[in-house]
Image 1 (cartoon, helix red, strand yellow):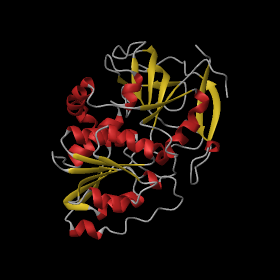
Image 2 (cartoon, rainbow, N blue to C red):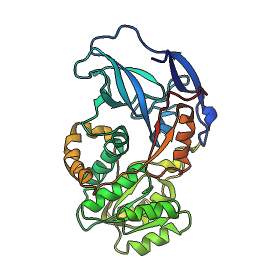
Image 3 (cartoon, rainbow, N blue to C red):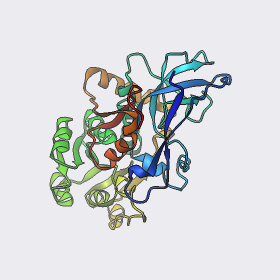
Length: 343
């Protein structure tokens, strides 16, 4: 076993757009002391990257405590069990959890987010990109918060991202008419390939005008991952009794001052519409219900997933930056290479 535990920590609170200098590399010893009962020693193999990580780096309370300066950056991962005192988590098993930007971590089933065994046949890429938080977020956002029904018009912002691309497909499989919003011709072409009736390239098209053209009867469900101008344009086109599902606000994650809210909230009143935020963590007790519907779609190839895979421990910070530059197609992942030179 490599005697060093490589880690990337938070060097300073980011101001505005993330920079590589916001993170610091260090090496520590592997936590090899005697394990407590039920505890396991994990070796990270794959890391997942999500827009919400930017929120975790702010000095403010949220649905999870902020990452402290000097602490290992929190992130989803798939890891191998190296040592175990828990028969339910045998050595060699693969688990998924929030084990951060490091090689090794200790975990316990009693943790707030305990390690979850990967089901047979599920690869690390599939666990992080398809069967993890992205698919569950899209599913419960559409089904529970949005109340999706066949024949409705659904608009998904950031439709080329990990959660957005799942929302597009789930809405189509539920019988909806789907319009995506994405940045660039390549992403829009990919979203159309997932089944969307059309996709608006917000970088090169007039978003509000195109929405009015594509949704003449209004938007029944606006699944918003962006906020800002995207959210305002969707509210302007909301149908009577429509629902705005607030999943993310990536347009404001780098803002140094709170961005202004949509200027047309009165339209929600006129249209008797509803706007609601949600967290996937509230639905963890219902994952079986979601997988009962998602699993067959995935097995049949009806529900597809895409991953942008980077390689190497030293590339971890710049891989997170890729997410906020819009350079990823689908879920942003990184495979840790233990044979590389140290940064």
